[in-house]
Length: 630
Image 1 (cartoon, rainbow, N blue to C red):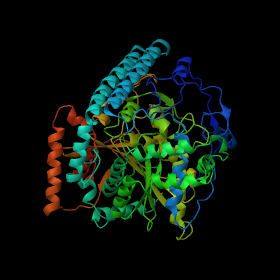
Image 2 (cartoon, rainbow, N blue to C red; image 1 turned 45 degrees about the vertical axis):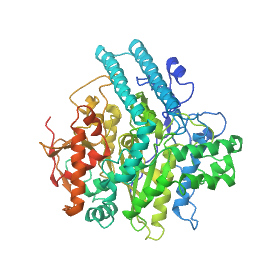
Image 3 (cartoon, rainbow, N blue to C red; image 1 turned 30 degrees about the vertical axis):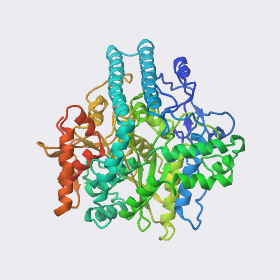
Image 4 (cartoon, one colour; image 1 turned 120 degrees about the horizontal axis):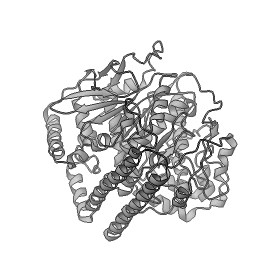
């Protein structure tokens, strides 16, 4: 696979940020999106001057010295090979993951903790919302008065602030209601009896997981397709060449994305308390981004505590054990690999088949009951992403902070580098007993917030395939319920890059009634509309959108700027007829979902959930896609 030459690119150079006095005052306590601080959503004044060269060695300085340093992107760094102990690849992944505890343990404790009483929880959530309002509206006023722009730009700022404030108010009421102890107990009882103990995100359609096995024809077809080699390159640069949307892969990757919701933050918070008690920052000497797994953690807490932390996060974590058991039903292994710079339940995980040549990188979305995560989603602050992803302009700052944070504590690990090394180590493990030159396909997926974070990691991976090593081939991404992510410049840079070496597609699958994926202004997706960069209605999505329309339309429509309008796209998949008891269970679940989504407003929110998406995916038919009218 061709490699990228790192010459005079945003990977070898970094812009000097010129944050305004206003922004610096708001950000004194450090950057975070999991409850330690709320960012405003309005645009900060960007600066394109004062570029300074950055060497690889400089990127290591952030782990020593000041208590909070700005992480800087560097070019490809050859990290040490993963250890090959008798315990296998999982130990390597667990120890990589455990190294992130150094950074997270130095944060303030999360706003909401599982041990809080309901009165305490109530006060914290309301206080969190009031803090959001303060930051959002002060920044909105400052942006209107100081930043250049048209009247329409200023109206967009007010509209965005108003819309996010009202939506988040409704979500605050929802979270206060659903977190009431009586309802929590009743839901857990109901879920254990009727939904096999699934989380709130998945409980309304337990057949997503419990009616699927590795012997299902669709799963078998998906696993074969995931391991297939990249299509021939003879028409690589022909944007109008036919594309194939593999429905079997789409379903399997959606199950992986939905499964990520079964993990909560409780085990993580317990581990962080242990790490805080043992942490000795002065003992950290290794550079976290290129150190062997466990070395940074060992320096910080001592070798006796390392194994305890790793086992509490994984081996003795019943939530992860349940996820591992489901992955095993599909013939795959699973491991959580990153906390995504957060003390909430946000995380990323790897699925792989030891007997095959593919890896699935999945990202967790926003849990319905976690107000802190909802606040992070609606805290909109455009942030320059070009230092990390070549050609990009502004992206949603809250999403960017999850994988490419602006500040790190001593010994901290950039989440992207943890993910990168986890993929590299797993790929090397899969290649060990295979012929030289074997390639490992890496696929990306996520739902909601998980889609936004996965899209940023995917964009970086497409730009810098060497990050993941010579054995890895970056394949397609299947994203679900995507929120708006970036400006027009970023979307154009991404779409242009998709045709430079291999032909890939980011498929953005949308439920037509989904309020999150369809209600927010995305005029940047329409190339006929030209708005200023300060207009918050001009933000865009990445990739090609496949919109699933239920009855009475009963069709799938295609849209997006990643390929010319009218280009042929075909849906392929294995047709499986259900019957008997299994069909009755599915029909009952569908009727339940249909009743729920029929409620005004509430129904559109529920259409953002995994149950509604799985129901619509089951109804998609094979054949040629029809393009949406423009």
